[in-house]
Length: 66
Length: 127
Image (tube, rainbow over all chains, first blue to last red; front, top):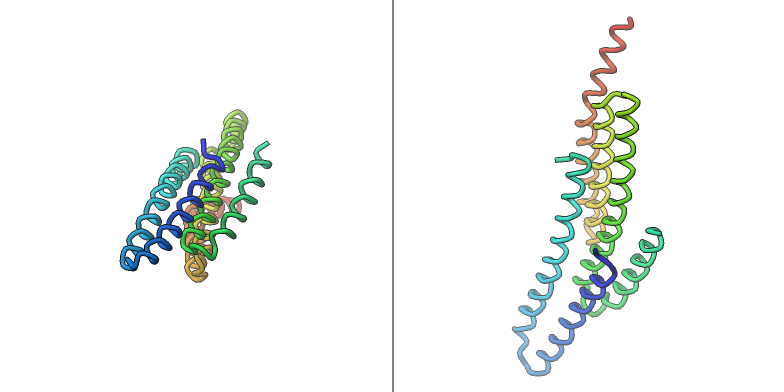
């Protein structure tokens, strides 16, 4: 279900953020770079949260933890 | 078979983190966490297989049901604690991971209280 593609996707997002920030620096729009960085990190966080919730639900069903 | 998948994910994540380290350091730490998460997901599947077999054997042999569930709960707790402590250490704050580990030890201690009390009663009856 999850494979290495997720890792490449997140690495791609990181590289895209870096490129967009470089472009924004060239166009003298420094203030937008913080927004793009924030957007990229939030997207990656959403993917990570989705996987963590699946891991914890498996653990809950199997081990009866919480 | 799974071990090959785990090794590949580990190596690929390590190199992607290297690439991203200087470009975007925050996404790099997130990437290492996701790599650990992927390996954890595979390991959890294997672990559930082990646990089901253990419970089946225990039920057949008629061993102490509640003790086995406590043991399985402790295994699960150890799994979660190690995962979260690893994440805290990845992001660099070491004392946070030690707090998580301390909390985990106390949680395990708390879960295993019934065993301690039943052991105590057993000894008292013997004497």
